[in-house]
Structure formats: structure tokens, C-alpha cells
Length: 272
Image 1 (tube, one colour):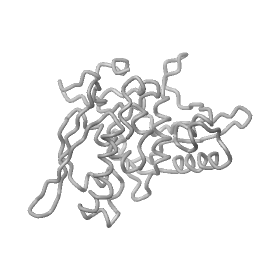
Image 2: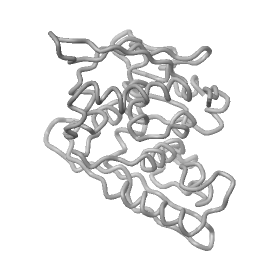
Image 3: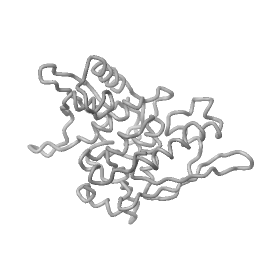
Image 4: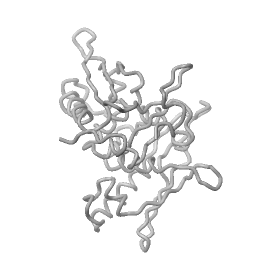
């Protein structure tokens, strides 16, 4: 059984920082993110930093191809990239680059076609992969002041399914509340399974996604989750989640509402 690895390990792998709306509302209408896509984007996010020359956030980041594939689970952590894992990497990044969805503009004046990354490219002689964050993603990743979530990359690298990954991020974004009630419709939307007929049935949703997902999160991450269904009449219409950080860990959430702040909300450096 894999256990929670702790904050020192988290720092060595880096921290992922995302706007809560990016976690809770990004939905590609049935075109589901794969686990490799989710891990790849989290790894990219963990590298976001400002340029030391002008203090502006960088858009493009270089990765060693071997390291990128090993960390994101495209090959064994002890082996070098071979032809198969290289093709998996390219296919994963193509999918991630091709994904888009219409979202409301921040000023609510209209909509904009949102993308996560733009222009992945490789440099064969150097063994380098360069990934550029799309300009439409900047407000959800750069210079965040409130209502964002921080977690250690190591937490999601250990997860074995895309559904569990999305449950972890979703619940992590509410960790400051400790207890939340989530409608089944909102939960399905967050997991991008709202159009899957099989998951309209709560027992099936619980058996295949919620129960195994929560068990894995409890074993492998910084969260300890318990849950129970809530009924309206005879039908389950909500899920109650209790969200606790494991001993010695700080909930990785910043959500400023008036005077309500977590200790981490002063700065990212305080968490690191």
C-alpha cells in the first residue's frame, strides 16, 4: 500500500497552482482528458515561474524528454525513452494542445475559445521538449491573488485514473471548507461524465468511480476524505464530503472571501 509521501517530497517535485474555476468548471463536453494529459498539464503547471530579467511570467518551458516521460508515467521511471514512449508523449501533447472549449470572458462581455497549451515542439539533438502555455490560460495560472488551489505534484502523479485525479483536484479546491454538499449534477460536470448514461445511476457512479477514487486518494495523497449520499425522497441528489488534511499538512487552498483566509493566503512562499 502506497502511503502519503509528505511535504518534503512534495516540494522536491514542485507545487501546482490553479484557479478554482479551471479545476471545477473546465469541461470539454464528453471529450475526456486522459490520465496522461492530466498528469502532463499538472507537471507543466508545477514549472511555472517568473523570468528573472523582467519579473514577468514565462509562457514557454523546456523539459528534458526523458524526465518528462518518466515523471508523467509514459515510461518506467528507471528507463530511457524509447520509440514507443516517445510516440505516447507526442500523442498526449497533441491531444492536450488540440483541446478547447468556449468560456465566458472575465468581464462577461462575450466568450473566448479557451486552450491550455500551444505549440509543443522537440529538439532532437538536445533531447528537449518545449511547451508553451496558451495565452487564454494565463488568467487561470499566472499571478493568482484569490480563489486558487495549491497542491504538491507528487499527490497526483501517484493516481491511477483520470476520474480519481479530477476528484482529488475538485475536493482539494474545497479543502478550506472542510465539509461540502455537492449535487450529483455538479459532481458529474466536474468529472466530465455528465453525458455518460451509466453514471446517471448513483449506485453505479459510487461503485465504479467514487468509492475506488476516494480509497485511492486516502491512501496516496495529502487528503483524508469521507463521504455519504444525501437523499431527496428515495433518490440520491447530493453527496456530502468531509475533507481533512493529513497530519502535519496544510490544506492547499486559497479562497479569499472578505476576511476569510487560510494561513497560506499570504503568499505562495509561505506554503513552500
